Structure formats: C-alpha cells, structure tokens
Length: 212
Image (cartoon, rainbow, N blue to C red; front, side):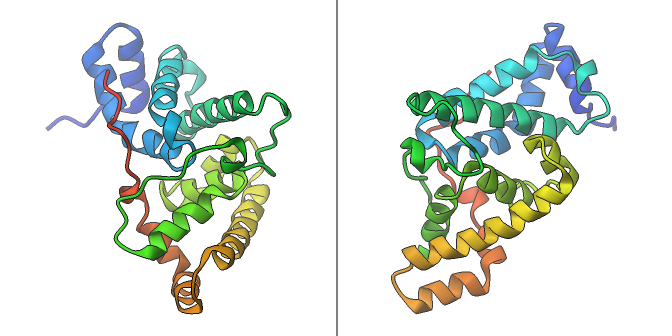
C-alpha cells in the first residue's frame, strides 16, 4: 500500500493542473479551515474558506518548504479573516487583533448543533475574545497545533503565544462569568473548561462545505 502524498506534493500537482490531487488536498484540510471561519464570522465562512484555498493554489510550494504546511495555511486564513474584519470596520482601519473581537465587527453568532447549554455559552464566550486570543486557543485546543506552529500562524514569538493562551483562558472565564445564568452552570464550565472546549469542534454548523 502506497504512502499518502504529502501536502506540498499535492499542492505542486494542483498548481500543475491536477484537479484530482487538488481535491485531495482540499478535502484533507477543508473541515479545519471552514471551522476556523465558522467560529468567528459564520455568515462569511464559505466565501473566506474558498478565498483561502484560492490563495493557496497561487503559492509556489518552495515558499512553504521547511515550514509547517498547516501553519502556513492557517496563516493565510488569518490574513483573510483580518482583511474581512477590517473591511467591515472601515471607520477603523487599524483593527487590532489583540484588542478587537469578531463580535466587535458585527459578526453573527456561532451556529452550533449543541447538546448542552455549556457548549452554547462557551462558543459565545470564545467569539467575544479578541481575534488573536480566539485563534490561539482554537488552534491549540481544536487543531492540536504545537506552540511553534501557532507562533508561525500569528507571526509572534513562542513566549508570546504562551502568554496569549494563558490570558485567553482568563478572559474566557471572565466572559463565562458574565454569560452564565447560574453559579451551577458556571462551575460546571470553569471546573472542566478544557474538556468542554474539546467538545466544540464537531458541533460548529455551517451551510455546507465548499466544493472544488
């Protein structure tokens, strides 16, 4: 049985006109990239996902060689997200991802197929975080990226990523305190925060995934 092609080989084949290989690369990463947008700007997620892959196919694989492909792809996604949010806030072109959230730019609420009230509250609290804190937490908990790769995505030192994750968890708890309707609900979330975060990735609902 042959080994699956690596991402850079698939990208090179796609750029050379091999749509089958391109579709293989697309299917390998579509769920993660689509989810990346659906947890922040659900109303624009499909278009931004398409734009991310269209931008990827224009890139020479040699530019990515030696770097993490997933980190590079999420970096493209983050750039498209920030461009989208800055467009929505034309009056403030200095949109700062360390201080402004998707909700600040008028993003719609995350659409969940939630089984528990805790999941709805947690998704809402995450979306209230400044963008780079939300991105750092989701790449860590949803995608399992190591610190070095999250640093590549955000263009910041690893030490800064550690601080973003720590402060992001603190802000998440603060938002949960604001949103929780009872102390029991709050205690159940805060007491097992990482477990509840781990339940969210497959519950984010979209309007269908883009196709090649």
